[in-house]
Image (cartoon, rainbow, N blue to C red; front, side, top):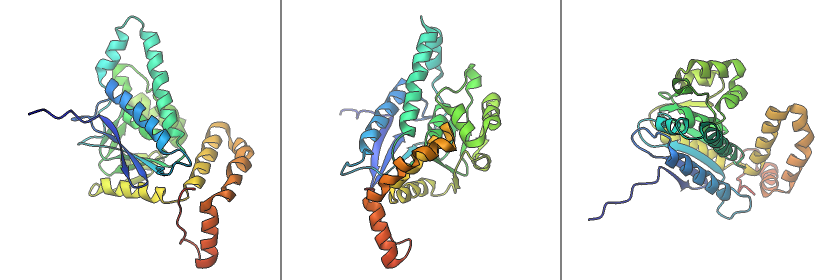
Length: 275
């Protein structure tokens, strides 16, 4: 009797128009080379799946995890091997350059992205959540950037993205203290978008992503570009690119169909195809 091969620690599934990235490395979903590489492959797959014009295009992305926790962090041996290797500075710099590319590629996908946190979400997993557009959390979920326990600062984009969401002093507080924060507190600070009941959380998070996928995703891509430009370069910079970003929406099937639906049947009855 042959033993079945273990499941990939990171895989992409489909739920209708939603592409679902699943982290599944029991028991604690610790990040190691297999997980980092798995997310790189998954995000490359997402780039292809969300490409405009693709017939079976995914119109939203959901990141979720299996097991009791989302992730207890990074396998510490990963850092030990770099620190004790022949070129710790070079290897460390290369690792962070690699991982920030991963976060930015996820962030730049042209569709809404949602991170579903059902439990403890530490370090790299929290940083991936911050690279998503929206974070949905169960009531029991908690979050932390606890890299101080190994003498690091979070370097997968977490501090700067926390500063975008919650402001610089909150970002420093989370990182300097290395504490865990409940979902409700981070919702108050603007880091978490929605706190949902523990019971039925997984399905509620999927339904949230499905609703986003059913919307005018061509317009959502324009929204993402305008918001990111405003945050990084200022409101006037977003104003400057707005005509080029929003003008093409008038040629979209979604806009033409929604306008016709509004005039015929009133607001809120249009259906969208993401074209």
